[in-house]
Figure (spheres, rainbow, N blue to C red):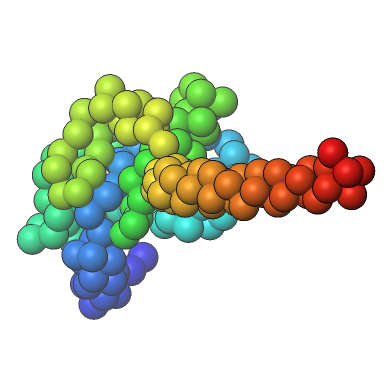
Length: 175
């Protein structure tokens, strides 16, 4: 059993992490096999977000004064929280996929950019393209104009070279 000082230290660690985290999803995990829990933790590491099982009373204290404060009343029963500083879409996608494969795993609530979202909105966030996908689409759009311009400019000089070549051939043939 942890001492009061150890619990206070745990709260301070959580509070520090939650203070810099604008995106989080609170989940109910009861009935999930240990192997599946480890699998989810592996997915979380690969996707670069944090996933941890929390003691409800400590989490309720830790979220006070943070962007996750609206989740305070959701820490009831077996609870875990997945959170990220950068990308809420990746968190929602990984957890949604895991929830589809494991029906006992369910969402309680979430926060995106410090704003509380409902369980149905978590699915909407999961269906959005990720930050990396959006950046790659924007870069493609920016680059496509330059590519078209380069092809068009190259075509003019190529056509000029072809015409000049044909004129040279005709002069050689004496036409």
